[in-house]
Length: 284
Image (cartoon, rainbow, N blue to C red; front, side, top):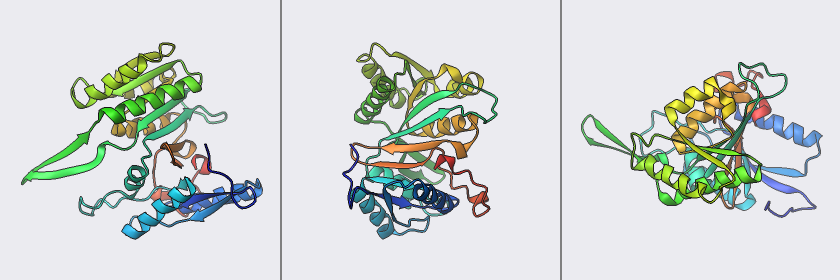
């Protein structure tokens, strides 16, 4: 349920402009809301790639207070030490925004190679390769840990099947690499199969991630709802956005049990086109 309206029927939503094209896209949102008389007031909180711990804490507190947020992507500085975690990732894990959902759909008037695409992608958003657990065990040897848990795999699988059921969808495809990562992705796949057994009316299939990318660019119409671990979701989201016209056309949402944060599907700062008035605001 959305939070109760405040101040004469109006709602307060946290806005985090972010970096790159984020600030100018937020101006478009404000303009549209103002002209449409949408009963929403924005509480603006600034978090950038150079933000300190207090800035990110203030942003998290604002979202907890308002329960809904709209954000631009916050650039991650790759030159900083491993101890410096992505501000975007801190937001998602701190608020337990475990489900990243995007809807890739062919749009009228947008010329693309493939037509009739209509895919819901559900990405686990709080673990996997994004756990930020890396270390150099000996000089020249780096270990990067991928965390897959039964609890979170069952949770995201349940979310995907429930979404499919509520949306009238007929098929869920689990994307994995269990043929190589037999324990990690094997656990994720097993959890998906366990949940699928409770939804006999929905067809369940599983597909290896490399084959998935080939199938997407060859015949994307075969997919309906897709569910996958974190990193695969990042890749598939970008591929699907490209299939329907580009990153400026596809919006994304991050859901938890309590909070929701909306952003572009590909989470791109668009730094190269910032302040040129050419960024497509459709995805915002």
